[in-house]
Amino acid sequence: MSVLPTGHARFATSVPVAIVGAGACGLIAALALSDGGVAAVLFERDAVPCGSTALSSGFIPAAGTRFQRERGIDDSPALLATDIQRKNHELADPAVVRAVAEAAAPTLEWLADRHSIPFVVVEGFLYPGHSRLRMHAHPDRTGAALMAALRDATERAGIDVLTNARVVDLFADPDGRVTGLRIERPDGRSEDIGCAALILACNGFGGNRAMVRRHIPEMGEALYFGHAGNQGDAMAWGEALGAELRHMSAYQGHGSVAHPHNMLVTWALMMEGGIQINARGERFSNEHQGYSEQAVAVLQQPGAIAWNIYDARLHALGREFEDYRQADAAGAVRTANDLDGLAAIIKAPLAALTTTFAEIARYHRAEARDPFGRDFATRPMLKPPYHAVKVTGALFHTQGGLRIDAHARVLRADGRPFPNLFCGGGAACGISGPAVWGYLSGNGLLTAVTLGFISGSEAGRLCGSTAKPAC
View 1 (cartoon, one colour):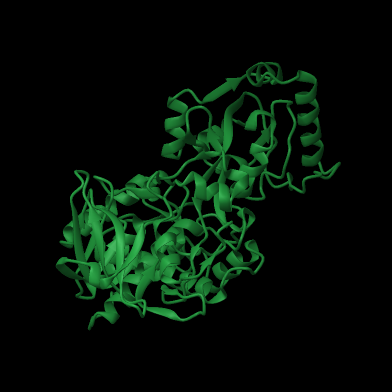
View 2 (cartoon, rainbow, N blue to C red):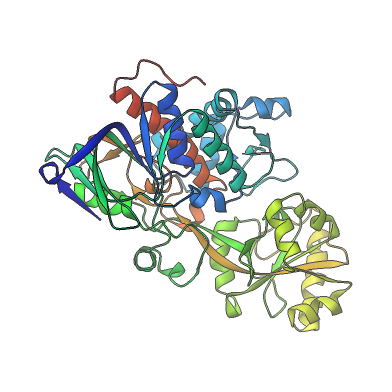
């Protein structure tokens, strides 16, 4: 991956706006450009656009939407921004946080009204760090369903998506203006294509093991639960142009991936009363601190393994989610009639497991305080029969990347924006601060969706758009 002088290019054709990556960020940017009357071409390395979005639960936090108002939920972008900054200890760029928080609701309503993408508010539990019910999802509640809806929308809009087209090089003038890109086909053929503006929507570097070891050493050998194509291309091009990289140690982890099935098990089970224990039959953390940082806690347990423990009430809740139903069908969910049976499944000492449940009962009765700081009083005590899922911690996607401003413009090391280079999603420095503990549930898709909209709108204005995407 390199940046070459414009004079080295042989442009066969040119497009107003080129978008690298056809995940949620890239597809939404293309839709915003199309609605603004500006043509865009998406360049996607895979045969079918999917990206990390398709592997996610597809939940997008947004505040002040009509979908919330219809459910009687009072929320605001300012409150969402406050929750984001509280989680990251005020270490994210406040201008970018404010921009994505304010753009989230209008972007979802625009996608629903102009592009027939349905959304529902996920109710029944509150994700860690959020002060309101604000997770929005496709009614199927999967990232794959969201991606399918976005692909259908771009097809209806007549947007060109070049698949099996891996971008290998960029071309730029000495002032940093990007003039085009070089794509490579699976058979080795290459083609140079010019552009008036470029949007980098090719996610982060989670699939690049060497970069993960360098920037996130605690996850260097962990399971990667993202898209293999996330190789850090945007960071390499940005560095070559003189852009600033920021918060490269930030990432979203997850402490609840079924092992060895490699299927996501919803964290709603923990938020609504479930617990995690290790092979010794002991709890080891506050399960309500957040599923991202819980990945580190799980990986520190013997064998890098933990067990999700919950009951029939929570099993019924889990079955509302497609990924949980798939894990259940695959045999990941085990059932025990009592603690003896649970100890046999986990292969943990019965005495330790009995002690753990006795301690939890005391926390429920307010006779003692959980040393990890969890409040057990707000949820029912677990009752037999018990369900158990063996899980490990995983890296989902990186949160550091190219520093941007509130207009999704990529910034140089001295803070000046490049003239025609935009960035969003995992390619951009996110809003989670510098570490795993700064990730608020949904931050990844929040920046993919909103920065897709913002970058598409801004690139459209740069290229002479006379219309703003309706929202």
